[in-house]
Amino acid sequence: MTHDHALKWGSGPVVWPTGFRAYTGHGGLREHGDDISIVASDRPATSAAMFTQSLFAGPAVILSRAHAAGQNLRAVTTLAQNANVATGRQGEENAAEVVRRVAGILGAPEDEVLIGSTGVIGRPLPMDTIRTHFDGAARSGLAAFTAGPLDVARAMMTTDTRPKTAVRTVGQARVVGVAKGVGMLEPNMATMLAYVFTDAAMSPADLDSALRGAVNRTFNCLSVDTDTSTSDTVAVIANGAAGPVDAAEFSEALADLCLDLTRQLASDGEGATKLLRVTVAQAGDYGQAKRVAKSVVNSPLVKTAVHGADPNWGRVLMAIGKNTDETDIVPGNVTVRFGDIEVYPEEPEAETLDKLVGIMRQDEVDIVITLGIGEAEATVYGCDLSAGYIRVNADYTT
Image (cartoon, rainbow, N blue to C red):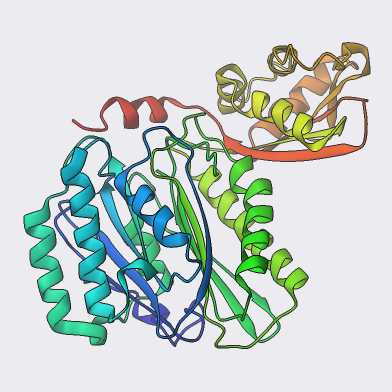
């Protein structure tokens, strides 16, 4: 195990909330580096979770859904590099065995453990090396739980280029999130995994409401390539060690933390060189704003134009126009801006186009659209489309 000692549990600027500790280790899922992680509360907790709606949801998701129904999860374990999806009955048994072994190490009930599994689809877990790993972890026990948030975020990575963590505070409580995912990424919550841990005391109902509100406006506003993973999972665990907090303040902090992680995920999209942010305003309702924004952020032609800093604003009009069910959108009422430069209906002059190229060369590119229908607004997050994305995914299993 290789850990960031400055960031270990209980020390340094990025630490777990009171009562949480973590472990990472190498279980043979990848050639080098830690690929198994566990984060656990040392006391009972409340929880909320949301999962992929994919018809091919993996055994980890199916098992975790059942465990999450009790709203008393206290631990999360993650296997990286192997999704354990489309692996039949054996895959189900393997996921259950991992949970059983983690529960044994923690001395906790199996149904209080959530499992995430992410990576290649259709390959069985290497259970021989995983069993050997857990045998050793069991002998070490909780003394080995010295990993920090960055260690866990790094152990969860597949094609990510950097670990993703975020921290917020609510009163005396802290909220710490870790996430992974840069491809097969358009969460449809109910390849992306995000876990949030807090020492705030929260009722299951308030926690569930806060999570659903946060996910709807953050992770579900994220898209790298329009593909919904078989393994998407978001969970929040609250152990109450810091006492009660205001539910509204907690919801605000959780949403802000999830937005932080969403931006990190989008900017690290496979092959990405730029963060793409699309805002649709003056829509008839939030759903319409989000649908139109997603059609723009997901357009391969828009994404490649952003990558090449090509001021081809006509592609944005195309992406809006393909929403043929949105019959109340009238082209004459629509405006489009790249940054602070209007490109439609006020067609830019040659000198303005030069400025537009400069805007599109920045690390973050904003496209703002008004529909002229109502007052609703939505912002979605994505990235450009580069040759690097093709390379990563063309060679993913070879």
